[in-house]
Image (cartoon, rainbow, N blue to C red):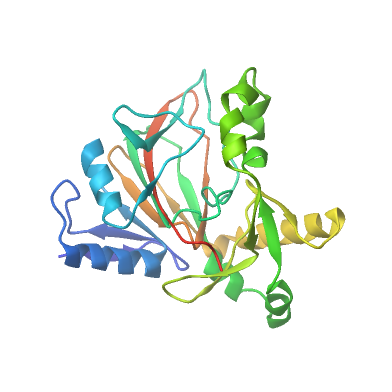
Length: 274
């Protein structure tokens, strides 16, 4: 029987009673989806799944996306490899929501730890619904109707600055021009309101001066990162995190060098934010 044990007040639960390497019934998929919407991020331990099983699990929740900037598992273009080592450390250290540079950002992400450091390397998540609820009525009203620009090139500016980076990512830039999303989105399942901006990809609130936009975005970023809206997960090999990309931010803690880490990630198609 599937059970979920919350790990923090705002979001997050560890799920037990299911083996993700086995065929999963429609009833179990429905229960997991309900837990995902309710808890916003759910965690599994000791799940030694193959790439094919990883893909099958994600496909049970919708069509899959690919990523324009990362290497993938051989034979599985949907599974991106997130690898960090002393000679090639990760560049992503900001709080963010995955791939908001797309017109339809992912519904969710399923991340599996293939190689995990013995210490460090935790990940933080934050509830964008709890952050919205924590705003005053007047601020909620002010933000309603505003839109913000999200930009692939801004999020991957460090990669673009590397030798050959602009050439390597040239097609990705063409394929992913800046897009606009509402600053406050509505979750399509729960109907809950969410703050939908992030440090990695959001560049500007439309209709505001640069100074005004920068000040408001910084306020929203700091507000969303309030400790009471977050949870923290300690990775081990074969741990899995499945988060609702519509309602969360996340941030890796890169405190494990010179150890290495390898994660494998699948993202599931989402809807256009409204």
